[in-house]
Length: 165
Image 1 (spheres, rainbow, N blue to C red):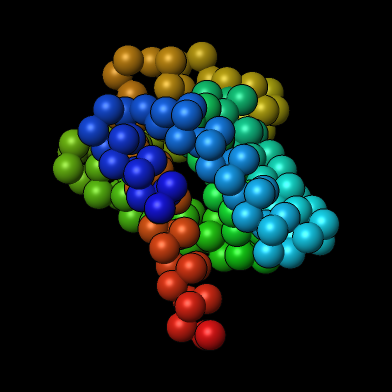
Image 2 (image 1 turned 90 degrees about the horizontal axis):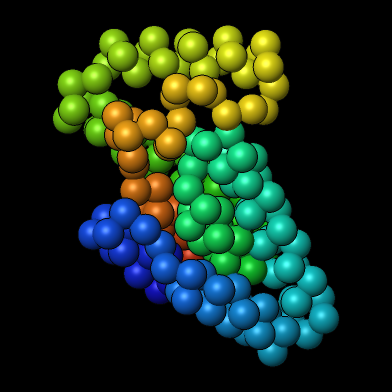
């Protein structure tokens, strides 16, 4: 539910509210503690740490917003490590499809390919530093509501878990 609400906010406002993500982090850890005791709490904590930690890398190079990092932290706390890996994989696939859709809709195919090459060369030469021009700081960059991809990954993982029984 948290991921769906975040996706709606991201689509409508371009932001994910802190109250939603922080509340979901606390709720996720509390639910995991209630259901799984200390092991459940630890799994939720590690899920949040892993999810938020991986997304933090993208935030540090200005390729992702802080709301997405906090949302993935919350999802990790709710899901735990094992489910988080599925969520992140499906979210990455959904994010790629979303990015392709935005690229074609805005007619930026060639520019996107050039920017990808420039980003790869820059990060190989300078490491994990923000690119001076190709980042969320640039007002010309098209922002993708990545919470939609996170919601898709979350729905897929929990739907698959329910179907397995």
